[in-house]
Length: 236
Image (cartoon, rainbow, N blue to C red; front, side):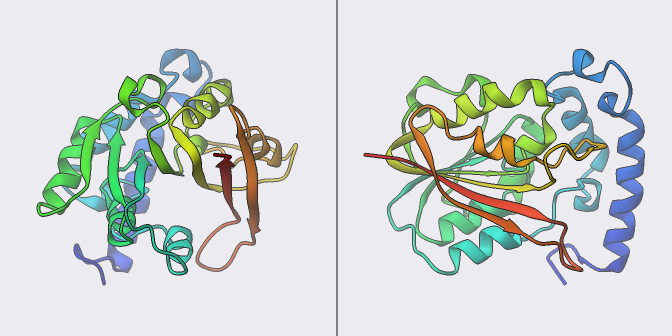
């Protein structure tokens, strides 16, 4: 059980919330990409309609993502400058900080950032409101580790090339981009959002001086669908 009671009843509320949110998601209908390309209006609606109940935020598990937790279990990040993309309620950012990193975390939605700050009032994480496609200039090349979990799969394919360039631009020489996303085969239909990523989309993250260091194709289990966990290095 988690801080808010992550029980079967919690997940039942989450399923009901997801159904309601799908009904108002323009990307579930023709023309949605043009109506709200970055899905900002929808993401803002998610946090507003949740009214403080984490079950209303479909990606909020009140714990770090298992594949991030597993990755961190074998390493320390002492002193590294880390950036958490699309931080949501803050669990992944806090896990990076617990591993020793100096963490900046941002989300597109102001309500999400405020919620994360309320959950972790003593946190050393620097929580910010920001846009991946227009990050502060001082962030350029400023991070030893950039962590991206589930942001790319929430974007339409038309934005993924620009997102890859934006991610690359944040990484310092010698730094690492760590990506966690749902996976699908090349050519397999995806009825998102979210849209699981095919191999070509993972490989396309090797831009702007990044090279793929590891690419793990993690099979589905009873607890989790198939995922990618990929790391991209910028040589120093």
